Image (cartoon, rainbow, N blue to C red; front, side, top):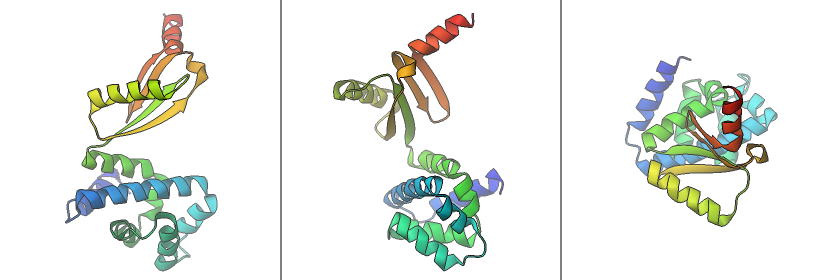
Length: 171
């Protein structure tokens, strides 16, 4: 499926009578769904196999995401449009599009060490730069020595000592 078709599909389902709360529910359900299908090959194979009927697939999806009405309707539509395999193979694309609609920013933070005080300082600075609606994930990576690396959606900001040393060595 082309990205234009997926964009049209997302535009259609998100411009309907869906409230912001409904879209947040869909987003959160899609995060759960992507975590399970990424980690569990059996579930992924079951859901992408055309031999299984829509109701069986929807039952599995309900087990994963719960009974959120907007989310169930979203997944029913995905199944009806026959793009469940596309969703599973490119869930990050769908999540990114929903984040744009919800004006959310996903930030992965990489640091060598982390405590509550450092986390609060980082959170406060990220809010100052990108606003309140943030999805922040912290990752420890001792190989960066010190400093911080930020992955903000598709952009990488490397303020680590390791990054500066690599840059210096490449001169």
